[in-house]
Every structure is written in structure tokens, then in C-alpha cells.
Amino acid sequence: MTALAETPPATGRLRAAWTAAHAPVPEVPRWTRIAAYAVPFTALPASLWRIAGVTFHLPITHGGQGSGEVPPWLPMELYVVLLSIFSEVVAFAAIGLIARWGEVFPRWIPGLRGRRVPPAAAIVPAALGAVVLTSIWTLAAVACARGRDIHGRILPADFPLGVHDWKGLLAIAAYAPLLLWGPLLGALTVAYWRRTRISK
Image (cartoon, rainbow, N blue to C red):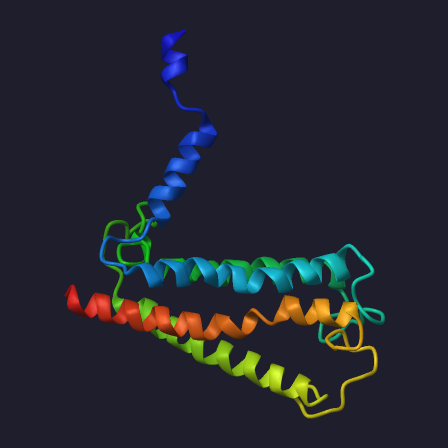
């Protein structure tokens, strides 16, 4: 009976492993920890808004949900869920810029386990991501504020983002945090570069 009581439940072991894997390395300043943990939350509101409005068809959006640039064989509801999961996984990768797995390959990666991550393998994609995300979301915000899409076309009357009612304001509130994703990732990338350059 005592042997069973001493064995931590599976959820406790999983939580301990998760915490150990994603804990920041000792040299990481407090502001970078806060920034890294904030990055996934910049993408989360838009993901939840998309899933609620498009996948679950909650009445929080304007107009019908067209197919956009989605292939006809892919249901829009599934596309939105996959896009949201992908966005969160990519956003979560920012934690690697402060965690041990961003400096040393985890043990579950065959052939690389325990080896040092080449700094360029993290810095180059993170820097490119920061530039692309900052550019895209800034361009989208400026275009939307001017009543146009990113191609310069006038926005339709039922465009989801707008200040004319609560649905539009909710969409703006869901997408506004994305403006922070690129700059936060850029700051984390510079901090990672400085830290790995010093520790060489």
C-alpha cells in the first residue's frame, strides 16, 4: 500500500517533466521569461475567435464564411482548427529561446540528444519570423484602419473587423495582440543571441 502511495500519479510526473523541460535557463533575465511566456498568448485570442466563429458558427462574426484561399476539398471549419493549432505551436516555439531545449537538443531527438543547438539554428528562423510577423500584422492593421485589405482593395461592408458594433470590436480585440508577436519574438531573439554569444 505504501509503494502505491509513494508513486506519483501520471499527471504529476507529466507536469514535473513539462516544467523541467520548459523551465528557463538560469542566465535568462526576468523580462525575457515574461516575454517568452506572453508570445503564445498573442496568438491565442485570434485562434479562439476563429474557432468560435467559423468552426462552431457562434454568432460573433459578420457575413458568411467564404472559402477564401482554402482548397475546395478542405472544409473551412477544419482549416481554421488546423491554422489555429499551427499558430499556437509556432508561437510556443518562442519559449525555446529561454528554455534548456533551445540550447541543448532534448533526449528524445535521436542522433542529436544532448548536443548543443547551434545558435544560428534558433536565431535565423526566429529573426526571420520576427521580421515577417511584424511586417504582416503591421501592414494588416494599417490597411484595415484605412478601410482596405493588404492588397489595397476596399473592405466589404461585412468585413469582420470594424468599430461599427460589438462583433467588429470583438474581432479587433482578438486580433490586436498579434501586433505584439513579432516585436516580442524579435526582442527574445536578440536576448538569445547575446546570451549564447557570451556563453561560447
